Image 1 (cartoon, rainbow, N blue to C red):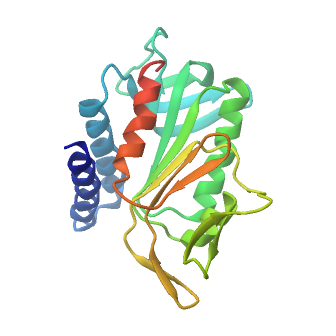
Image 2 (cartoon, rainbow, N blue to C red):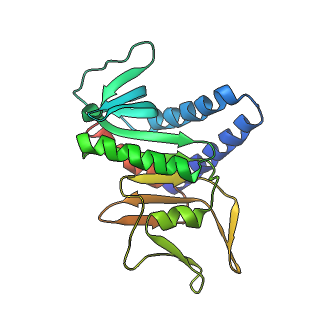
Length: 219
């Protein structure tokens, strides 16, 4: 039954995003998508402390963040619906992108490095409804390359990833991408363990909710 739920949530996020696209109001579309992800997390993960606001660290202010998961036992400093939280009090930070550019993923990886310099246990991840770049380019930066012989992505040997600080990326983009004579979908879930682990087959919300549920025990 749970697999049906996760597949339903995959589809629900995509449909909600498509519905938002039909209303060409750029000032609110991002907030609509963020609020929808927050709603799903609040309904499916118990005892989680979710906020929107700014994160600070020793390096300075890191700016506005879409989803901040506050550690249990820390003071709730939210005021007017916004929070200003030290990285040391964050269990996790999630960035949500409607149409993620490679430069935006790079910028968030750099920001995650600053967060982790203060709090190595903080989890930093992204949710991308669409990729405004090639999937193989992004995965190459995590140490994967596309093998046309087996028609799939494999870990490089030796691996030399550009990105080292992101803990996960959920990409829901169903557009097709071609590599040589091969074609594949752009959706994936990637998570960090000892190295990076890539999941190509849906449902992807299963992995996303597992990541956030692990934060609920400390966040």
